[in-house]
Amino acid sequence: MRPTKVLGILFALIIFTVQAVALADKPSVIRIGYPSVGVGNRPASFGTSIATVHLKGLLEDEFKKDGIKIQWAFLRGAGPAVNELFANGLLDFSHLGDLPSVVGRASGLKYRVLASSGVRNNIYVSVPADSSVQSVKDLRGKKVAVLKGTATHLSGVKILEKFGLAEKDVRLVNLDTNTAKSALVTKDIDAAIGGPDYLTLRDQGVSRVIFSTKGGDPKLTSNGLFLGSQDFIDKYQDITLRVIKQVVLASKWLADAEKEPQPIFQLWTKSGFTFSGFKEDWTGENLKYRTSPLVDAYVASRYRLQIDEAQRFGLTKRGFSFEEWTELKFLKQALKELGLEQYWKPRGLDGNPSG
Image 1: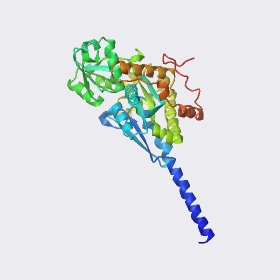
Image 2: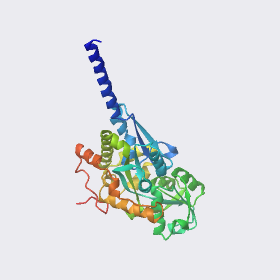
Image 3: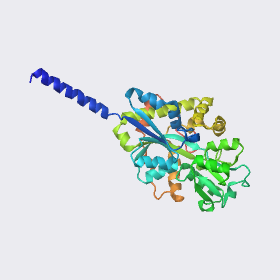
């Protein structure tokens, strides 16, 4: 065989090997979970930086040039369904509320905290419009809907406790949000615990809100994290950094629009929920710091509390260290490369920017 032909074959093998390595350095698809669905089960949500990343198509734009597909899974089964997908190796990232993420971590799921995706999310307790129930304390013995295993579940039992009730004092019915709203309309349940999407039913005149966490004790609200599969973030560190950059940019877009938030609420209506509901839920709120990506003292304190509360209410059997759960090098690098290291001040224990 001629030397030039041998060299040609060797060169081709080298090119093939380089291409194979390059392909191994990036996935063909990035799979992202979200623990809710929109009106009519549409694949969209609202209220967080991650929902905003989806609605603005930021990841699709970022990875289009790489030929990497973005696959979103909006799950009617909420947090428990997200955990099931992670357990079966079917998700790479997800926004997830506090209780299901705590339960997942305590159960041994190998995902890490990469960023905060929303804190102090308000919870509402609704009853049929003509119900005799006037206060949460009147729910003793009543049929109350909540999706068990979710952040709303943990907030719900704490709200019941605030009014002198334990979970066993009501008939807690396990229903997803859309089913619970229908059951509230047909009066098959006496009350439902959920988010600001229940304001739509009130505005339609079919329900009343008897309790809201808005403007009240933040310990009764829920919080969310952006989580990444340990296997994915170890294997694709550059890709993970690019994903986190888009989360940070979505958070900045939300913060920049804080004084004139109409574009935010309009974007979120793609989920099917109403502009007026978003406006009511967020009026008077510090939007910049409720959607800050920082995993700061406030987030750490809230999750240490939720870890303890989940055990106290018997929703999980063991605790763990929040700090050992986090992997924040991607967030720190994203903030540095985007020139946003000083854009958000860390929140103090009261949830407000320190200093």
